Length: 190
Image (cartoon, rainbow, N blue to C red; front, top):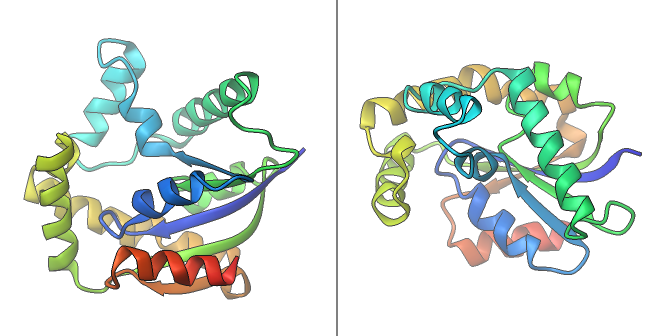
């Protein structure tokens, strides 16, 4: 069974997690943020140490490891009854993060729509990420050099995922709007 999926897509700091969390509170939707799955790891475990090694440099965790962890998490959420794929739409942010992941996950995901939270002002993204680092104690957002590297990695590796899925599935949303306006744009399309 392929999961009926909506992707919330955009650069780090564009508001994917904010929108995903709100959508996940609506009956019939289940939100999964891959970054939250990684950050919930025990950093003393081998997987946790591996995650920390990559994220502290602003790099993406290797594809097979990312997909394995995500699949395990989704399976557990189904067993716990939190995610019911027969009735829920899966709201994903942070995965797939590159074209290789999108190809590898094609047998699991029925991507029905993509909301691209577009923010061309890189300085604004850096500001948002620094603010989030303080508010949420996010180590991956604390260092400006790491942030800028994350933004470069997004442009080089993640943004091409939009081309992989195509324009017909993608709605561009101005991530510079107030969060409630971004949410309204998404809900109007859903």
